[in-house]
Length: 185
Ligand SMILES: Cc1cc2nc3c(=O)[nH]c(=O)nc-3n(C[C@H](O)[C@H](O)[C@H](O)COP(=O)(O)O)c2cc1C
Image (tube, rainbow, N blue to C red):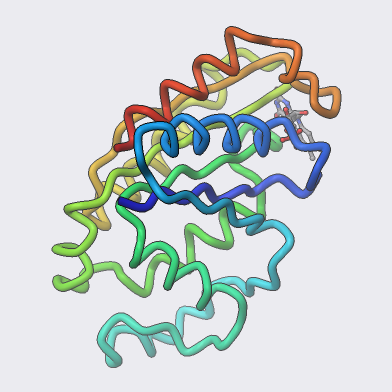
């Protein structure tokens, strides 16, 4: 059983959503999972080029960049947790690069079959904007992963996290992140 966290905040060690992912992964590890956190915002990932190479090459993307490592990690994982801050009422650009590159698997039946055994959750952090303003966009990304075949599980937002590492003082939010890690298994 392997669970991976994909961190799409550019803040690195100061990131709130990274702490939430680490907390979720610790909870998954406590239930026996092997875990890995991938800082996707620190990788070199191009946007999808819409060349449809993948459609003629068994779901493989032609772009030879760091997304290839992410593809491999997703294919090998049983559970995937995407962590993204809310940027202008949506996921970060870094998260969207990864999501768009998942297009290589779209309508590829063997991938859909593979992903049907994998759980997918999203954790978001934000400042002060009300959830009803941005949740429709995040739910739409959740739907994209459903269309790819994943079993979608939790979608949790952790608000009030503008200051670097503010979440560390919020036990309720850390507990919410733990629950995501427990549920993903
Ligand atoms: C470019 C940018 C856009 C943002 N847009 C929003 C927003 O629309 N709504 C909101 O509540 N917070 C917004 N924020 C605040 C972040 O969502 C918040 O600080 C988040 O917790 C940061 O997560 P991190 O520490 O993991 O990077 C924005 C921050 C940045 C840098």
